[in-house]
Amino acid sequence: MDRNLVDPGSFRFGLALEGTGWHPASWLSSPVKDAEEVFASGYWTGWGRAAASGGIDFVTLEDGLSLQSDRFATADQAHDRVRGRLDPVVTAAILLATTDLGEVVVSRNVTHTNPFHVAVQMASLAAIGPGRVVWRPQVSADARDAMVVGGPATPGLRPEDLYVPTRIARRLRDLFRDAEDYVRTVRELWRTFPGESLGSGDTFLRPGMVAPLELTGTERYPAAGPLTVPVRNAPKVAVLAHHALEPYRLAAAVADRVFVTPSQEHPIPALLTAFREVERLTPDADGTEVYADVAVVLGDTEEHARARLARLNEAAGFVWAPDTYVFVGTTDRLARELADWREQFGLRGVRLRPAVLADDGDRIVRELVR
Image 1: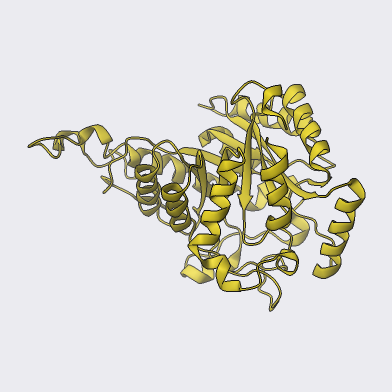
Image 2: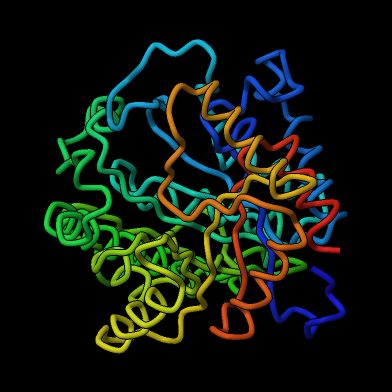
């Protein structure tokens, strides 16, 4: 998309970094053949620098307490899939220190972690990259995650629940309410050690400005503080919200930014209408920025893109059906579609999930944003 066609900064592009790509068969189509490379800092630094030089405004990093699987909430024994992730906080620190990326969006589990620890991690990243850190609180309904950390069992989604908003809301209501309390607790912790409390010369600290929380969080997430890291630039909060009441309510209540997931059944106009209605009914909601979250398979022509997806699905052994809309086509048509979304619906930006990072991510960086 030609930036000259829009006002500077009026539409923002994000690249979702995940292993060798988001399609389950991405490893088989990737030029990366040494698995160790995916766990080396140079791999992520290379993509961070490419994204920044290509005009990408932000990248996102995923979190996961258990290994990825092709089977929902169940481990598999696949040997030709990417399994395992670097800690997103460590990866973000590397990207912030070694690239010119404008923002790094860091996912962090909020169902099986302590808000004090996450508050310190995000504050530490904000010290490395002031104004360049966004936190994405991630709710987990996967029983395997609870087993990994020895935490309490959580209500789980069944595969047949995934695309039924009422079932998502009913099963996960308590998890999302807890997540709202968690985010509020983290934000309160960021206020317990303000950057302004640091002095200079013979004054290192103004102790009167550092204090514990007046409230100690929730029974599930007790946290008194004060934080151990000064916070001058508190990170923004982004929420990935599938089309259901509870994710929308969480985003409206605590997020600065929401990534919505369009589909054939729930196109962008319907999602925007639904989210804005939830936002209107949510106390203290304050104009959350809306971004689309889209998976992409790109090609030289429409036929080439469709053929690429067919080969990927054949290699995977099933049809790829992620939790959001899959665009299949050329970068020119993707640019036109995104321009229509921006002009007609006022979207603030888009996060693009490349099916194969080396192919689709490269096209996004080289062809889409320039």
